[in-house]
Image (cartoon, rainbow, N blue to C red; front, side, top):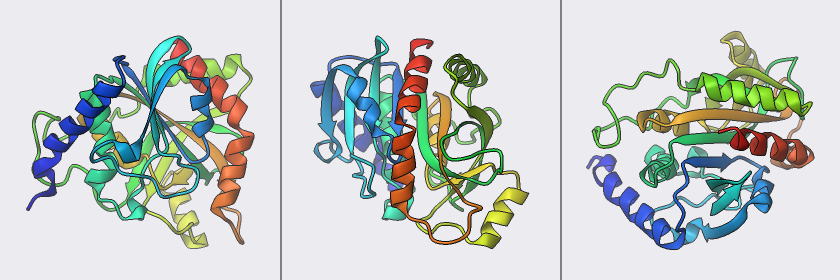
Length: 274
């Protein structure tokens, strides 16, 4: 059976549950990556729903992904904020990983800010920097749109040539510049994980034009484009993939924590200008 067959029913069931709990109707959605969940502290008038309470929602298993959906006001704008995400490497299908994107679209979100923590492949990007994603490379070797297409979600064939909205990227660059935040533009390589890259893989990724590498974002962006959403992608650089030797997820969380203040300033400034 095509797993896409019942996706519409699952999306509507999730959306109806959330509508019953969160009465506002935000047009802005934000997904917070590894260690970046503290932004929810600044949401006013918020209602919080644990993912485990939402029908069909995938529950994150990785540290640094709290697994809560918040609705409220950030920079005086109504927002939905996903505090953490599920990953393909956790055993979820591509349909499961990206179902929250479908739900946000069903709830009326039209602009999506997707964030992640990632490893630098570019000598000019160091831990503590932010990278505004201008393009990506899908190295998951699968695609969340494989299978029967539901035209109610989007078209069969999807143009990914302008996945990351240029106007949103300009807003992000301007906010970063105004606040003295280091934010460059670059290309994100999405891989399945959960292993960190070998030296040969790092060399390969660099050679094909990737500036950072991570284990998320790409499937979500594909589904967001399919859903007709405007997308801004932001990577928080937490480590150098070119650095050889031992590395752990805990170091990712530590570096993300260090960038917390600037991250909050950046996201709130962007939301204020939407």
